[in-house]
Length: 141
Image 1 (spheres, rainbow, N blue to C red):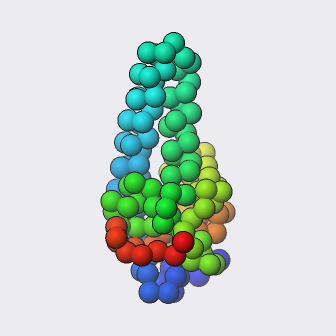
Image 2 (image 1 turned 180 degrees about the vertical axis):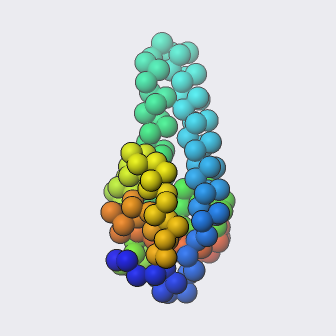
């Protein structure tokens, strides 16, 4: 579980901290824009504005469960989240676990990615790794 990423998974190298950070920024902007759109729609139909918070939260928690273990930001940056043991794409449940930790602990969680294993606390909890994959590279299902 705590093996250095150079050996996990196979020939896919670990994602750099800078790619991970840029992917997170892209995903944060996408989540915010999505929340604004949902807010405008909710207001137009007289619905609760809390739907916008829900939209933001759902994207932030579940986006790594998108096809190939790639949120939009990760796809743009050519990285992916994989299960450390099976090397399959991140599931919705694992995405929730790894990202809930980030939302709760923030920078404290991110600091752990600077270690030799390059795994945040959320990655350790969800048993995931973030690897360099390329936007069009085939990934395990």
